Length: 494
Image (cartoon, rainbow, N blue to C red; front, side):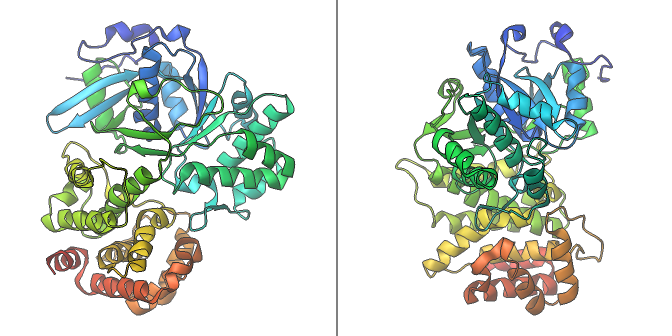
């Protein structure tokens, strides 16, 4: 079917094809209660869907105002269609389509920072949630502390009312509320940070204290920062996806999101200004998120990263393509097996079933999740995904060869030259520094591995651990000698 040229919008929801789900509530009665920083595909396929369910259950005071901190692309695509968009859930047996109405409006922070601060300071806003990726917190991943020398933090400290960073916006809005005698909002991090709520609280209060110790103390004493674990695979949307979704709708959607059937959200039940009934929408409310967070980081995210770096080097474009190679599928399983030994889960948690479900999800042929996309920002991801498990295994005197191969894959990738001498478009906050170290060391594992292990922002003190250095250097040497595909085959067959 040829895609329609008529744009999705509030006025033509009744023209959607019958198979498409649509908002089950009167959208004109919804008012905002949440500001979300980082209006990307993941939020729109995950938290916004949950809030859409809450609105359908009658919680009409919890609509979302989205904020893109830099790019206007999402706002420009969604504003002409009244911020309605489609979630396309892809499985091997077919695709389901649902139009989401929870997003009421959006702002672009760079265009007018004061507007975003105003929206966040509004007393109607009781939750500020975030999906700004690990690098968006302007912190040092190895320590979890604010990076006071980060350019955006330096800017925000000198332009308090016109911030650029997520911590800057949060503190500016909380300072406004304190000055007006208003209660604070809950800050709800939905990014893959270790102990994400506690980490963001530390970053925000450290930033606030640089402005005023009293402000930092007020935020620490009155605002809440629940920890969370989020899980749903959301690939990039391409033009073919847009055409397919528009054909399924019978209307044109400029910015749909693609995702998988599986979704999970575990939330620490600690909200200073109230919340919608998340449990009724299928969310797990707990007193301690940490076991679930480590489970996801060390099983899903770690194996995802291993597949991304080594799969990219081996020439695979997507995770599903990579999983068609039985040696790479076995590698993912080995990363999970080794990491599982570092976890202590609540009674009743079936880690074997969880690991089996991950392997099935990775192999979903309908989900085109690019290895290059997952490989982004590795310097921010490695500490949480791979290094923590390596450290715990070393403390137990267990081998770390499987994780070392994944780390070596990252090292080979950030040299920015692939196995055929072609350039790699490395997207990472430390890309220039890493490439410089790689050029200086050359393609020699005994020089390159120590050079990169010495990057304190990534490895901290762990980079000097002799057993880790030996394992990573050996794995990197194998990658240079045999290439990624052969190195993975040799490793899983040993």
